[in-house]
Amino acid sequence: MLITITGWSPTVKSNRRRELAFRSLASAAIKYRVPLVVTSPGKLLDGKQFSGWGCSVVNGNIHWAKSTWSLTPQTVVYDAMYLRDLKTHRASYRHLLGKLRKDKIPIFNPVLPAKDELYRVLTKSQIKGGRLPQTVTSVSPRQVMRMLNERNKLWLKPVFGSGGRNIAFIERQTGGKYLVTVERHHHHRLQEEMGRRELLQLVRQLLSRRAYMAQEHVELSSTPDGRKIDFRVTVQRRDNGAWNVTATTVRMGAPGSVLTNFHAGGQVRSLGRTDDNLESLDGLGVTSADVRQMKQLALRVARRLQVHYPSLGILGLDIGHTGAGEFFVYDFNGRPGRDILTDEEVVRFMDSVAGYAHYLSELRTHTH
Image (tube, helix red, strand yellow):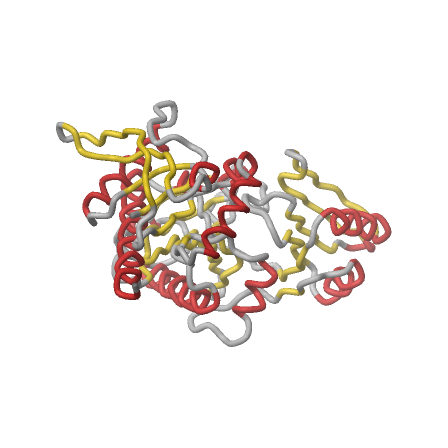
């Protein structure tokens, strides 16, 4: 049995993409012969029996019906709780995770640890085909100033967060001045030139609110009109347990923005399923061989993280490509947004979810 925990009903009609995701997951579960139930964390906490939505095919269409269900020895849980869901179901979600651990029920995809911990894990040894930007974790205001003395540009990134929220980009100017850009800071974009004293005050203010890490600046490739470019590679484990690439998406920053994030005003373009989609690569400064290298780099990073976080089954990696031909992995997301995926990629995404659940369920069958 595949139990999907979420804050949404699978019968929702007001959001076409969400409806597509649920329908695709149902079709894939039927394909892999895995009974699917969609429910919320609170309902799954009710006991050995719980209420939820089950699916079946009626006249060639997916049909959802509410019912009462019982846990089986082959139960696997897919954690589809996104940010809004986590805010609404915070307490019940936390209690459910504890219960699943106690009952030894496998759950994927876990909330990843803080990004500074992930960087420590990944920088223990070299990664073939690319590297991570130089990063200082548990950074202090004094360390920030020292790094700016060594290089002209750096990033301050929250160790928790996504979508480019509260990320600060600092550039050292002439005359002892610094240009600071903070995207998505309380829903606004802050850009201001300031002196050393004002910068220290701002850095102290940022660090007092949340934990940050400092990271070297990577000079990303740009479009002919000056938009910064990076690549989101979405990888998943499939029905054989192996990692595969689900989608490769080009992200182009808004004009003048230091971020490429879609939610920070950027644009996205799918590269499709072929590495030789030369039309999609036009004007991006990369070749089909570069795209293949990025995919292999993403798979290597995913396999390394899996060693430390065995229940990891989905990962979105942000990879930058420089004019000098270097590849940098500089962000990871265990809940990569589906809003940048095409409809075809959403279908493929959900097929991998059901396939991996089938793989985990079979493992449970052989160990019980």
